[in-house]
Length: 396
Image (tube, rainbow, N blue to C red; front, side, top):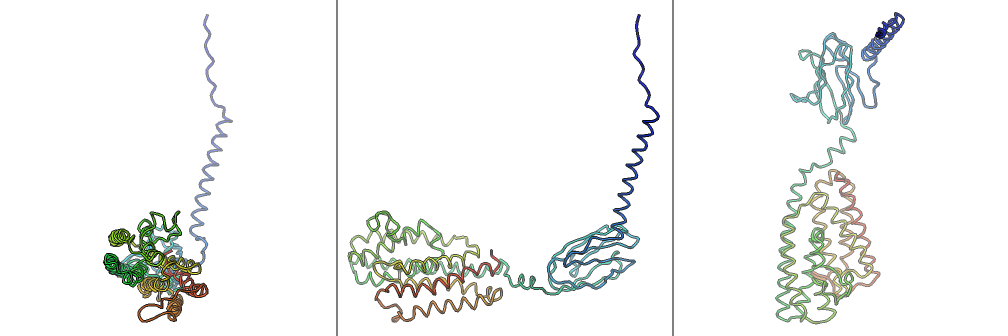
């Protein structure tokens, strides 16, 4: 005898009515949300923020039809109260600055645009409608931005500085070759006479030359930074020559030292020729060098044996002044007060050296501690002002 399974029960009418009611509620909620969004867009455009403008288009005109805003960022809210979908544009001549398209009747759209000073046209709905006017007045922000040089403006300064580096590197190479000739001739007096000018030539390009740590170590490192000081095999370059001339009074060890220095300077010339110099490196390198010089001066400067601190300072002055002079046309526009301060600081540096000058060089007497500290003050002040240049030019 077999038995059959019970047939599934049909949904009750009560459940059916509940489902229909739920669907109706969802539909009503959706319609209410749509009505709210539409009505809100039609009657209550987004709340204007600072430096914001609401433009309402009715018929074939904008209200307002003439707008004045300060340069910088402005948020425009475009409300379409016409019966056509429309677009709103800001035009600079025939060029579109910014636009919003397909703004439906009763709706609004917003756009934020950064504007420069000038006069612009605005389209009011249909392209055949009369155009309105948008005047953008200068602001503190736009004036600061206008004063900030474009990177293109640095091309000339960088190219001229590259030329300066090549010429000065050539001068340095010639000076060291002359030094080598005097060493080979065994003329201690002549080598001493040529040493300070040769080292000064390096100082003029030191803001960039010291970027190459390996070369700067071989060319210009002091004995203080080597384990065995003057006896260390790594102690080479200008200060090794200085030590032989004034600490040992002996030219015999110098032939290989000068020969290696010529090689290193040749490599430096090639590296400087291919050096990639972003504009911010100019002032920052000059400031860094002068700050280090100011720190070293009270402790005796660099030239412990020959005491040629003044010649070195003159080289540093000339090299950093060249950089400042190249940046001057840009800085005087962007930050005239800082340019004035730089001019004063360079004048103070030069004036601090003046009492020690003798002919085209300097008096041979070494500086005492008080004199070195006094010289360090204008050097440090100049370094601090140069450190402000990149920010003033918008390079930070």
